[in-house]
Length: 230
Image (cartoon, rainbow, N blue to C red; front, side):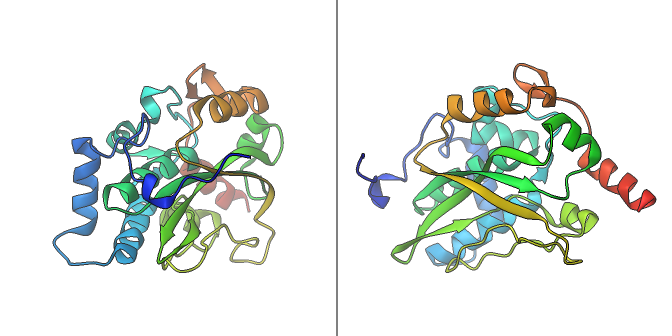
């Protein structure tokens, strides 16, 4: 078993975590402003910036190598858990917070009927989140589902204070089963492109419109339609 990478070695630029790029730097500057902050406070502020300033959308998502660079994701302004976790890992590293990408399989009980059909059920392969190193320990953070989408689907937005794990709630705001974690692949020092993209494509082929882009659609439109028929 390979030795775990020391936290101090998890600050560098990688192919996907290109935090030296001006687009990433500008995102960080806009999120933090001129306020003096501790590293934990910076990680928290960046969590909310990624969660709410980048729209969560599984449809029309770019999954090419170039499309999964943090700078490209920020420029596009949207993506799903994989995209948002790449951005959060990059912006944390930009401010000196060691970060990794965590991967799991989950069962999502609140997926729309169309998304269930495209996925082939309610089990999603390679749900992505993050681990960040703060105050001498690793904590998990999930800066994925923005406030608007949470409101439309009746889910309480996940908060993060930099001291405790922030992972998806098992129930929604009405007490219905929401998300179950089925398998934990562990934490990765960089985004494992082949594992994730080929894994998602193999598990959910109807979700893809082309080799490197998911099919068109809108989670917001589907949520609003569900609300009309509920």
